[in-house]
Image 1 (cartoon, rainbow, N blue to C red):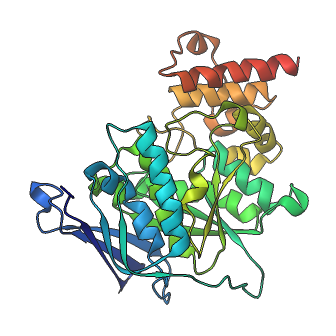
Image 2 (cartoon, rainbow, N blue to C red):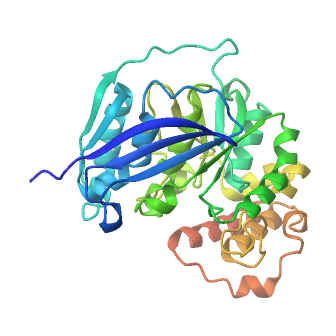
Length: 359
């Protein structure tokens, strides 16, 4: 028997701090407390007069894992681009094969499937990159803002920092502090920092390890009126891909629609090589924020697994961890480090390989 569809209705309203875009989900019994539906919102901080996108691609991407888990078709009250419909069908097929006990392929049922022409802005096709202060996003920003890849570089103009993912919504002061921490780096590259606040992670029952990229892309699509491309810093190299995982070179591009193409960047560099690149830019090194376990969401605790691993990346790259952690690498803490999974263990091996290769 076919599950009841999830209906998606989107609207926009002005607020004192910018624009709020709301996606109301209804029609499926998502839970006892959600019998009358629930709302996902995206606050575009500082924005004033932006129309809703001509297609609702980003809102669909943001909830696809919920639909796959429930086995519910998505009934979208508005247009969706044809390329997204095609891409998401293949995206779902991959996840249904990886996790058949958890996910099922579902139909997209928009009011209209449209083919949008590719329009070129006066300044050419530009890009926005996801950014949280971490190693991957920082390296991507440097590579493309500085055009280090020559004519293989994207014309990066904006970075997007999201409140509601790494920094919880309740920690507004910490988000402001994170913006202040990273602003000098953004300014040093001559880029514009865009800020989005969203509740999608906190209100929607989607497994974060699987869905973090779809939720991030849903936020980036709010700027599809400005940019042809959105760049995502890769967490693994082409040599070391692992799945199922929320971001992989095999499927990330399948989140693209007519208005915006999703580009996974940096899969040619491992984490230590990215740290070596970042170390060449002192402002970037000082702005790094990698910690997610510490109590202060705007700084690095210096002692959790990711902080210690990043210190090791920096030392292997010949950089001083004190620039962003305030202290150096303690060998005793390294000796007590216990990887939680194969991914973390592989990262440690890559650091040893890098250090050995550099003597």
